[in-house]
Amino acid sequence: MARGICTKIIDLCTKYIKITVEDTTLIQKAIADITTLDNNQKVLADVDGDGEISAFDVTLIQKYIVGGYQNTGLVGMTANI
Ligand SMILES: [Ca+2]
Image 1 (tube, rainbow, N blue to C red):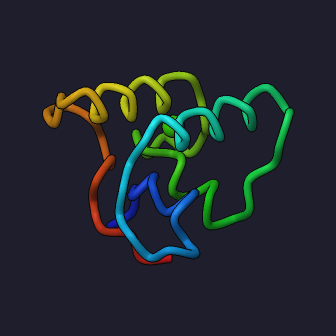
Image 2 (cartoon, rainbow, N blue to C red):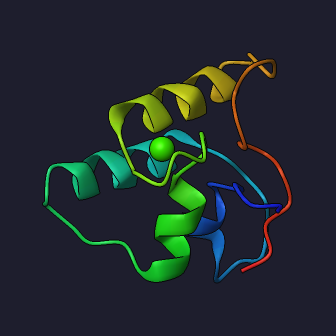
């Protein structure tokens, strides 16, 4: 199973793969019930693959953004959605 380009959460329109802090912000807002994610976004946001969207997923994405490309779950992987 390939999934986890979190960036597609914000880049579905532009088609560019770019993982940014806006992705983490969007997920944090969803966790706080400030916004909702569509089904594809929910799959993409679960970058540790545990079936839930949590602060840990956000942490993995933040780690990836700052250049920590090891042990970041599915962040940056190709997604089939
Ligand atoms: Ca998760």
